[in-house]
Image (cartoon, rainbow, N blue to C red; front, side, top):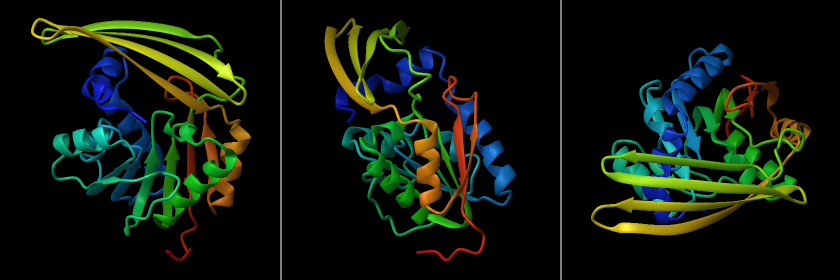
Length: 243
């Protein structure tokens, strides 16, 4: 789970690496509205600091977020004071509301540690859909597309603060372990270093599709978006009863 140190620089470092949250939100919305043209409400699960959510807020009449990390929740609430951001686990949550669209971005569903947890998360997403609603998932890498031993490095300077990020990712069984080192430096505080380790499951495409179908959703996979990880779109039947 993301801590306070990373929360402070999360969006800055990823935007410096070329991540365009606004473009991703617009493209996902375009695809979702092919399936549900009248979609008005959206829940972003594992919303982090609200980087995607702030763009979804301009594309839908009503939006909300869900996030497990308390520092990220606080950051999202500060950034989006008019948007409900709930603290909760994507594998088991109930916020007593239903949405036309439920999203889970940036490979976050890979934090499910087993296929049973993957199924639990998709079931929770589906429970929060209106009839005919759509679930959109930006997955983590599949086993065959994952680059074992991948190293990346980035440095950016904004408003007098320099942030360096170096990561190494290696396969561990059916998951990957990603160790990330950060150095943050500015004139007032000097330089400080911290690390984060993430274990992210390498579910095959078929496992995602099985979980969508088990949740009562039709599913299609769109290759290409999100740095090549692709996008899953699952639709609920129009005549289904809400829970």
